[in-house]
Every structure is written in C-alpha cells, then in structure tokens.
Image (cartoon, rainbow, N blue to C red; front, side, top):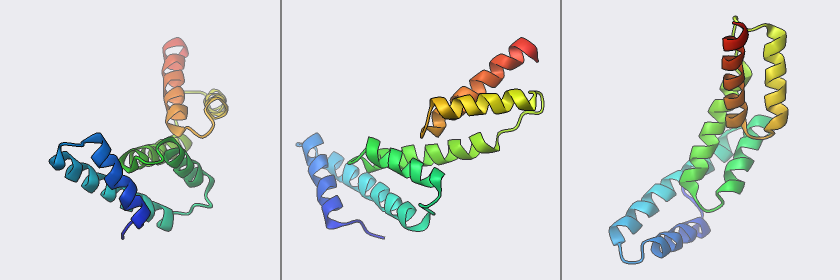
Length: 133
C-alpha cells in the first residue's frame, strides 16, 4: 500500500525542515512517517467508517495531527482501544445503575474522546469503590 505523492512530499518537506543538517534523522522521519501514513490509509480503506466510533476516532486523529502520521496512528489506535474497553466495561462490585450513570456522565462530558471517557470511568469507579465498596 502506498501513500499519495502529495503525502510523500509533505513528509519529506517536514523532515527536511525539522532536521535540516541531519540526513540520518531525515531518513528516519521519512521512513517512520511513511509507514504510519500507509497504516492510516489501510485503516481508512479497511475499517467501517460508517461506524460512529470508527468515524469519530478517525476524525479526531486526522484533525488533531493533520501532518503527523505517527501521531494519527497513535491517537486512532488509542481511541479505538479505549472505546472498546469503555463500552465493554463491567464491574460486578458496582451497582449497575451507578455504573451506567458514571458511563453516561463520562460520555456526555467528553464527546468524541474515548480515552478521556475511559479515564473518567475508571477513576469514578475507583472512587466509588473507596467510598462505598
């Protein structure tokens, strides 16, 4: 899978600007960014972008890091993993109604940021456990 010539040009220009006199680092950055850009192309072509979670995670990664493909991959993969964990989260020691309330609040406070939703969920569950568990 290859990236567009425009993406290749962006990667090369950014590497040259960041490391003007260090050709080894330019090469490293170009290789790393190209691999990450290819990975993002793969995700966009092979994942169900009509799925709300996938779409939100892609949009977040692309908008926050428009020309840093390694960070796009990092954000996208982190968001997908967090969303999967968040929505599948169960804790038999917490009252189901309380747990659903925590999830609902985290979801409404951090729209489109599944890592923060998961963080809030785990912190709130831990605090509830200390207070009432």
